[in-house]
Length: 167
Image (cartoon, rainbow, N blue to C red; front, side, top):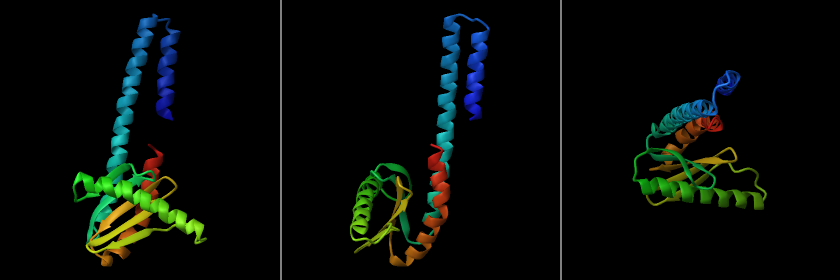
């Protein structure tokens, strides 16, 4: 909010001084460039914080990869070991599985979805909704990691959502 007031004040002072149109446009362009750089720096800091928060989940033994994704499957941030394709699949297919599981729960009257856990021969995938628009998809090596992982994901959820709301 203070940033917007400062920009408005600079623009207002420029107009009061009766500078030529070219000079006002140049000042406006400089202010806009400053805003873009400032916003990019803020965004970078927020995403670094989100990545650090996701990194807490990696501290749980057996957790291999964590992806924060939008409910449509687009990656927001990731942490862990794995090729780019792994994170793409976790995001896109994890979000799809979450939406299907959510629809199933609603259709059969089971209430709000808490999480989805799918078990495979070589590990598990955990999908935890974060509000209406995001989810955390996690690749886990064994079921023994689930308790600690769920505890950490619930603990970091408010901070992650706050960081996303500021975007």
